[in-house]
Length: 247
Image (tube, rainbow, N blue to C red; front, side):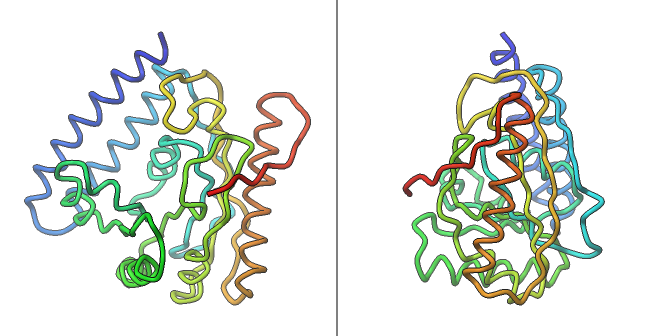
């Protein structure tokens, strides 16, 4: 029943706020659309609590440095985006071009200043990532990126992509790793939701200047190790390292 009630709330909120965002997109500037989307994500987190019985606990915000940063996050489910976006006023986020296939989504993504890249990767995708994230950096906005580029089941991870390293050094912005165990309660695109307390934890920032491979190893180890500890903490089971999957 919780999953059904949340599904109803999810689609109601998405349609209502989506139509509102399209209306305010006619006004100049990014602020009107951002105002709507910010409230949408906060209502979605509330719906997670009220209907799916998934409470959100946020840890580590005291670790965040002053000024804009790059948030590099573990990606268990669609809920990850709602949880982190709801915590801040104005985030530029990196997303695949698959979202542009939905009607009118391209207009909203453009208004929000989203960084849309080709899901297939390659040189052109890296070029687009650099140019579009440069606009966000100029505006002094923090950037949200999922370095694996895919949703992953709890306990698994994929190869971390180098785009976040290039962004860090191009714009001289620290990278804040973000761990979570949300996938225990809302996994990937699954309909079923499980009640519990999901944790979103901001970890110690990584400053620019590191060698690419050393940086990616450190970023992966921090995110995966802490995410697995959060999973063990929530389930009352021993810690086990996450497993690399193909793709």
